[in-house]
Length: 149
Image 1 (spheres, rainbow, N blue to C red):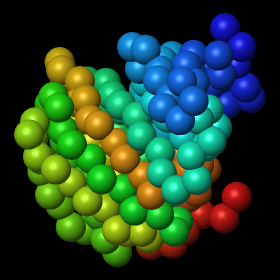
Image 2 (spheres, one colour):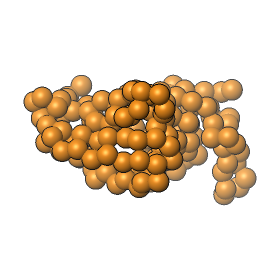
Image 3 (cartoon, helix red, strand yellow):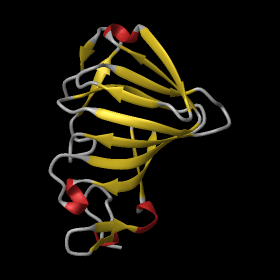
Image 4 (cartoon, rainbow, N blue to C red):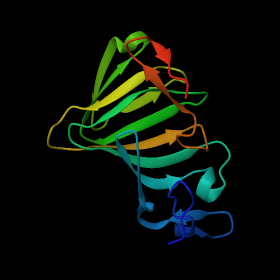
């Protein structure tokens, strides 16, 4: 398998002249405590405005505090129970379960928790950015600020 610097399997994409396919969802990659099936993005299909993949938060896992800089995100929870702590200093809380749709506006600080110690959370994730997580910025919940890298 030919992979790029982000561990994306470039030759997993079948180009049928206008319709592209990745059989079985492609390879797996990790970011911020979440396991991702490769999915599609600018990096492998040349999309310009969106990316999609399947995210799995392992039992007891956490996707640490961050914001989406300049893009929207929609999720559909396929399996499990998830809690988002969000807003200023992450003081607000919402819980979601399989069958729920979630929309996260650009710039909203949030941290994501798998509420189960035994079962994963699995979600279909769609971003209005073709760059996947390139524009995700860490957030300091104590200070209520974006962490500059």
